[in-house]
Amino acid sequence: MTAFASAPVAAFGLFGDAFNFVFSGREAATGGVQVGGPDAVFDLAVKQVEVTLLALGVAILLALPVGLILGHRGRGEFVAVTAGNAGRAIPELALIALMATAVGVGLFNLVVALAILGIPPILTNTFVGIRQVDRSSVEAAKGMGMSNREIITKVELPLAIPTIMGGVRTASINIIATATIAPLAGVLTLGDLIISRNVYGDAGVLAGAVLVALLALSLELALSGIQWALTSKGLKLQRA
Amino acid sequence: MIDFVQIAAVDPDFFKDRSGGGCIQDNNLFCPGWVVDNYDRYVDPTLQHLVLVLSAVGIGFAIAFSLAILAHRRRWLASPFLAATGVLYTIPSISFFFLLLPLTGRGTTTAIIALTAFTLQIIFRNVLTGLRNVPVEVTEAARGIGYTPKQMLWRVEIPLAMPEIVAGLRIATVSTVALATLAVFANGGGLGGEIISGSNLTFKTGIIVAGSIAVVMAILFDALILLLGRLLTPWKRAAAL
Image (cartoon, rainbow over all chains, first blue to last red):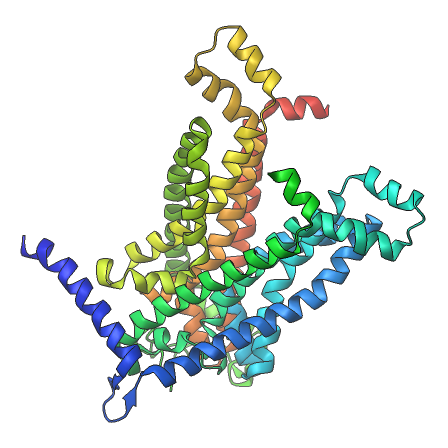
């Protein structure tokens, strides 16, 4: 009985500790120094957002043009689809650990590793999205005298936006999740609160977990907003 | 600053009494001799990893499949189910482990709950899409020859949705194999422990072997489910002939 009754109370207590950890900080579990507090936590959060957006940006810059061109020409289906499948099988932890051990720690290497995780879903979805565009729309565009470039940017890309953004959102979820273990690669993000329990204690761990979850959900919400803004009016009408 | 000893204690005889020779000291990308002498240390983590993946995907499939059938019958349920599973999918597993900390503490159960939560969206979405893509003519015909809704579901709709269901199961399983390496942070075992050990000692071979086992496991599961899907849709093979 007591175990039943005390579990929610204990849960509440730990959440309270986590709250205090973020807003006023506490003494490190190792003793001596003060850890946590709004400034320190804010810096870690900024770092996590920074590496996530950098890596997502790099992944989009590399994967989007390749996917657009392959999709437009209808070539390289095997490469584009296999990349997506293979990408899912990469264990995030092994990738980060190997990058840190074999190549070196630091922001640049971390961003490269995270971008590697982001490229496959964007590449695959861009390719598939472009291929799914109705061929008659493309033929009509050709008939109107549009150049290849115009066909890609004015016809295929707008029609493929929902699928492409689906890939970008999958990539962002992978990247922000893996950015949480970035402290393994020497870059301190919010994940440090989770990983270095011996310093921050369970209050820090829980605070880190809550903040990482909120950050990931906010990013997802922001991307779905961007998707809505990028989707052409015609497609929105069609859905409604 | 970072001390992983709490997470994965490196056992003291990692390098002791082994005949790996000079390549351990060289610590190049891969040391075959060490692997030959140490393959046995990967057996337990691999089995733990299998348990994590099979439990998470099995439970996840049971829940997501039921939700999808429910949402297929009552259409208004689809949006809230999609949103709820979407939130669970978006929260990074490593964060999820510790959100559960006050409730289930550290351990395999916590890891399995978080990994299960991740699989729901993928499976739910695919099963629902599969059920919705069944042509209306087919369901009309089934109704015409007197199928009850239950017969329709099990004999017509689910079999025809099988390709999408299998596709969802493949994506969920392969992703979960990769993700389960993080279970080590929740004290949930699995191959992640060996990756962390290798990382702590900056011993590349240890990381590569554990990571490769996970990749091979993902590929094998993928092939196995693909095969299962073929067996469950014999009419597809007939059509191909």
